Length: 66
Image (tube, rainbow, N blue to C red; front, side, top):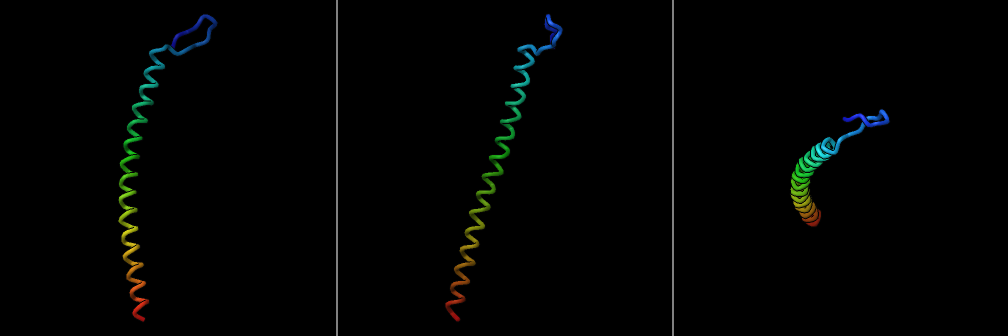
């Protein structure tokens, strides 16, 4: 920080750029971490829906036999 003429303190351009760069890097890491989890959850949801449809078909077949 630098001290301004009126006694207030301010940030230099370099400090602001460094903070923005850190925020961007953290955002990128979070984005790719979350996207991996979203892809895995979509895959798990599709598998679950497949299993549910198999169970529903089996229940319909069992009720038709009675």
